[in-house]
Length: 328
Image (cartoon, rainbow, N blue to C red; front, side):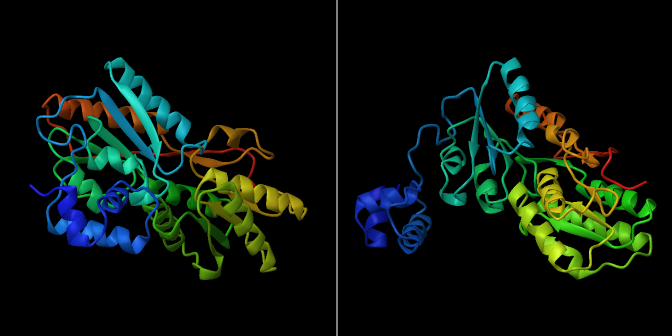
């Protein structure tokens, strides 16, 4: 079996440098990291982190890996995971994937430092997930589709949600409808955009590429995207934001320019975070079952750990929540 010394020798670096590269410690250059990782793959090197083989001791811990722990969307999701985890006598570790493949979160996957993982993080690759999952280390993904025996999918029906949001605006008489998107590599954003375009097509409304503005699911990006929309000087009738945080940023940008909601332009969000009910005006949005998604995900992990079978794919529906941000 290859050792860290073998990897260092193959890569032509010091043992300490190889260790830094394989542990995601940012003391070495990306080129060196790539060289060390290539050497590790060629030698089939496996780290000796605890719980790294099939006979590992159980940790009674589940990992929840999220893109960002601070976002208001995540609180209900975490609550659902936490309550089911505690009820089964397990601990929960929630960690951020900031840093992607070099993040601390990836250690829980690569070294099997927990008994199972739930992932909602677009910067964790499919390849890493497939390599990590196995019979005694099940993984549930909330934001993608993966063809792997030991990876289960719990997804909100984002296409339906995007369709319903857009159709609601069309039914209220709007024809020029902008879409403020999430990150380009977000599976959820892609599905919501698909629903948006499908509703436009089904109702004979033309899609205009100029009305698709990029964001990244943060309030600040919604604010910037809306400022860009305003700068075009030809406002649409309505805006569908791919999540509530961006919509709330958009409300601020419109307010600064004395553009009234919904008198001058209608706004719809997605998620139904708690704050959406309390902004001015209260936000019409698509509610997704955040708590239920978290609770179901960890329940499925316990099923697999108990040696029971489970379906690989689960789809949860969304619903429209009408408030005051869309013109009647």
